[in-house]
Length: 514
Image (tube, rainbow, N blue to C red; front, top):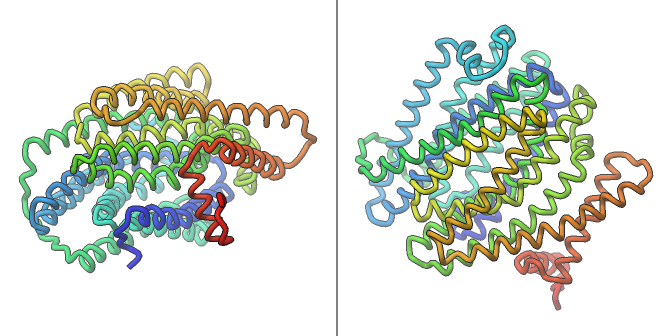
């Protein structure tokens, strides 16, 4: 059965393959929204409401990876399967009750609630009240879907999160195409409501069918230590949520189309992270947790170094391409229908600078697996709070100094600082991690990619006028060829070279290094 995978390597492969299809559907959604609705005010409001809901969901479900899942693995190793079921059921019913109460609170006066949470004029929110009303139930549906998917993933159903995401994307796209004239922007939200409901039914079926799950509720005594970890984790997650919410709040008062433009840019900028980084981080998190529990620290170091270097090697050129060709990328993907030249400018400005954070988020993501494996909740939460408070402060001042582009610049600055702080944490708490190798490798990649970027900039100044597609294809081809040639000569990343060797062997029957 392809749903459950015993091998971690196969888990990464299948998750990545499924993610390809999902990201294709996500792009189709973005293209459809951009074509039919552009960066109008009602699109701003949809993205604002939906992102606010997602931040609430993320705040609640971030507890899954930091406390719920790691604790469940210890219970699974030491106690009977029924004990784990009762443990997870406790959180399923807890999440349901909590989100149901939140939905009721929003429905008391949704206009006032969203007015409090934004800089929008109440009259503007009232004119699009239907979007707000439809967005509220997603708090409950998305929270339960995420928890069920995370539970199944912990049992090595690595493809489940991608399947759930594909269902969401498919329903959303179909509803936009079929009902955009009749329901306008509401068609997007309605599709999401139905897709999340379908996902919950599917995930419950899988739990029952393949894990013989019992959904009977039984109060579980989590223990003082677990409750303490939950308290610290959610304190940090609350500040993290504020850090993610602050840009939305500040940008909601800047001008029409800014939030929509940011979302279109993020749809592109986050694809490499979602498609590649998160897949590796998600699977390696479970592997690192298992090895750390067994005290196999040398293997933890090997996995940390190889995974981080491999991802950095891939992400750095993508970051450079986003910076060089942000305008061309947005033009090729979105400039049609209601998506005009001003929409292209705002979106490409966001994309160019958001892309610069990609290599740094790789290091932060994989390093986060160490904190989770060691259950250093207080330590990681403490810095998480400080980091996000700093982000809020930087975003506030950067928006005043640089306009809307101040947000990605502030985000980049905090990510660079976080990479430096990981060094301190590794020296103090994970001395078996050879983190200086990562910093040296990062410096090397920055130097090589900066050289290629400067060369392409100089070539661009000499080129004759060409369309966006031609410039993008030519520039990306040259960039990719330069990276591959450099890697071939200096063997910058052995894992990537091995990957190419296996790929060539499968395609041609001949090894790349005979």
